[in-house]
View (cartoon, rainbow over the protein chains, first blue to last red):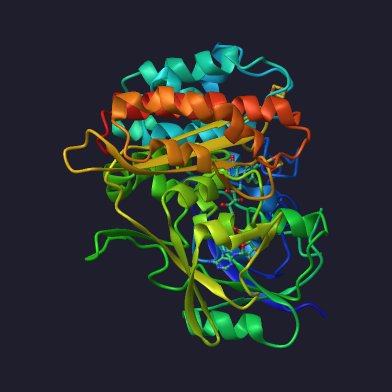
Length: 176
Length: 290
Ligand SMILES: Cc1cc2nc3c(=O)[nH]c(=O)nc-3n(C[C@H](O)[C@H](O)[C@H](O)COP(=O)(O)OP(=O)(O)OC[C@H]3O[C@@H](n4cnc5c(N)ncnc54)[C@H](O)[C@@H]3O)c2cc1C
Ligand code: FES
Ligand code: FES
């Protein structure tokens, strides 16, 4: 019998508690136990960025993060930066600039861009490329993603509007 | 893929971590997990117990100590080193090395200690730390010892560290001359990298001594002795030409693995190109540290 570890953390602004075996991966906890399926798994080896979540605001690969490691921390997923109605400023820019096709990489890009703009609201072209170099897209050829982010970097926005605020959500906890 | 089940504990002191790993069974230190979890998911490493060192205070300090040496705690993430004001002031080449390791997600949790202890041959820090003449301080059940960065990696994925020795801190003298580092990669990790550190004579017109390390070619970083020899005592503006005069012979002496990063000749050529660019940069700094 594998030992269970209590883990409590903030998930998109909502406090949650759960008991899990130590080898549980964060992506599986969030997708399968909390039912938030927006985060995608692709390479499973920290290369593609499809599984990007924010841990205390910094981007991580949830495919290669132990869920026990988020004890006492704040986790933000794509669901946490999506307004109840419509799209966030960042999501909207991706749509306007054609920064997505199949959309599989998009949640990861949105999370990475969220972290980038929080740390640096007006990144240079070089800073955008450097920051996003670890997110892979097999459809767009990157130019349109880059243009979407560049349009955001040029915008003057008030502090509050700069980033979508993580909102409370009611999670469906799978108890199986 | 999931790793096979293991026990997990958090150490709050160095001594606790060392004794927890040393107990029966095969425990391992666990830091950012960016290498270890990948290997465990692929089932090439299995351990019964992970001992998390992230809660041990003091391992993520960066300071210039009273002996004019830089100390970098083993638990410092690449992101932390890249943005640290002390490192940016005294060793900007190391800050920029760390800012370019892997991708932003690996940099936010992956640590310099984890990088060194994994002993992956296609790595950046071991090359520059070798050129900086760093020593790595390990603490085990019988006390601490320090190992030169050059002697730490024994071969591919193998270091001289005992399983229950925790790397505590990385220490090197504050550089007095230019530090240059370049790497070339077409995939995730460097195919070739070259670090060069010059100590300067007073007045900074001549090179007192030089340390040159080439990494990612063999199983561990290698010195370019002929280049180091020819630079000793040389005026800065003669450095580039002097390196060229011994370069072919020096590159020939390197051990080079042929792999998916390229053939031996190709990689030797790249090492030469990177070294000459480092030299140009160091000359442009006119022998000054930054
Ligand atoms: C996609 C990808 C790209 C990468 N690209 C690069 C690159 O371009 N250049 C480069 O240099 N590196 C690269 N890396 C490697 C990266 O730098 C390392 O993964 C990271 O620094 C490891 O640190 P960690 O804290 O996550 O180590 P962990 O995975 O936690 O540990 C690694 C090993 O070290 C041991 N260990 C960890 N800390 C200590 C300690 N303090 N004392 C003793 N033992 C310890 C662990 O037991 C384990 O065996 C890349 C990695 C990935 C996944
Ligand atoms: S699925 Fe995690 S980085 Fe690709
Ligand atoms: S839109 Fe299809 S992978 Fe990026």
